[in-house]
Every structure is written in C-alpha cells, then in structure tokens.
Length: 64
Image (cartoon, rainbow, N blue to C red; front, top):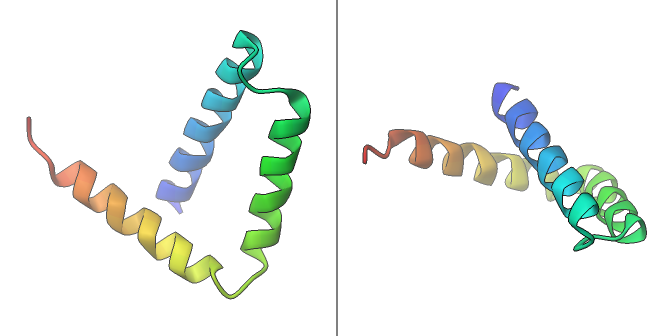
C-alpha cells in the first residue's frame, strides 16, 4: 500500500509539473488517468502492481 501511495504521489507531482510547463495538456492528463482506471479493472492490474513493487524493492536496495 505504501508503494502505491508513493507512486501515485510521484505521478501526481510529475503531472502538475508537466501541466505547468506546457508539456502536458489537460486532455492528455485526462486520457492518462482514464487509462489508469481502465487498467486497474483488468486482469493485468496484479501484474502491474507486482512489477511496481519489485521495481521499488530493487531501487530501494541500491546503495550509491
């Protein structure tokens, strides 16, 4: 759950930055949000969640 909230927060910050810089239009962001909702309802949702958790584990295990 903590990884999902962190990823959500990161994506929201990136979306706001892109919207302010003009690199992401409002309609593009809307399409991305709708895509996320539709993906969450598919059978791919657990696979995507596992991939994000695994990636977060790998990144947190890196020591510079």
